[in-house]
Length: 329
Image 1 (cartoon, helix red, strand yellow):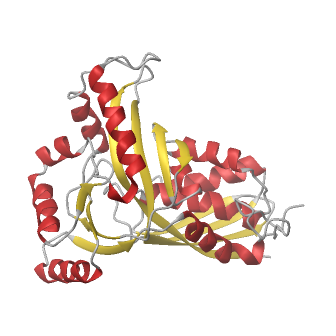
Image 2 (image 1 turned 45 degrees about the vertical axis):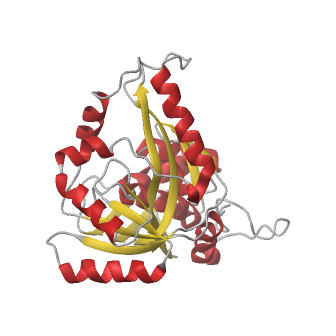
Image 3 (image 1 turned 60 degrees about the vertical axis):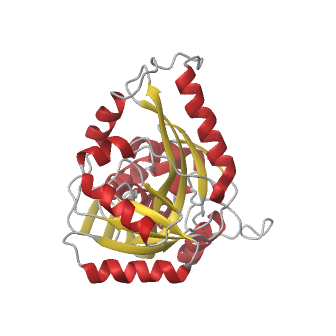
């Protein structure tokens, strides 16, 4: 009776993040390019049909108000299903680093649990559930490279980038997202968004972001949170400079921090940099060598993980997305 699957929840980098202005609803208007990477958490999800519902969450470490558990509740409510859900979460993605670990875990449950529980949800409904959990969650339902607008939840797929390699450094610094937004708000000179972008500084920021997005892997990477977060935590500036000295061509912070990454053209230099970081042994610092994961590879990994429980779309070469349950009636 029990159906189970083991899946990976991949991390992301922000290949540029521009904060345009504060909106009338209190949120900030953003422009960003999301990119999934090979660093991942692992989830084991199971569903057992029953007459009552319960959700058991086992994590490493235990996380209060876990997004994955909340995602499971939303799926069960949306599908009007009863039964026992068990989620075992093994964390590898550092928390509070801007790598999207919690959001990716939630998206992993949104993709997996409907398949196991026999609930067929269209992508529009999954994305709406994801948006309730966090602005980054809808992106992880697709993966690859995508343009994020609004709070980041409005998504447009971009052409896949080459399988670039990067070294991600997660430090002991836990950057507060609320503090980062408050600090960056003080640097904004634009009025709240009113439907037309008339402020010259704002228009220039939009123009530069568009050039960066179109340039792909030849672009510079600008994150508007860097200045304010590095001002609070000078040690992050030191990490950025060491990555440059090690041979990284483009270096930036991801999200609102605190992880910093460097993209390397030379795999040998990347490995030397990783070994040097490991040897250095700074307390609280971890170095992860990662590869960009394109949309085809991302979605292919999901199809393989869930193939025992999904239907095949014979008219499209099994390209149906999201994966649909063969247990649904």
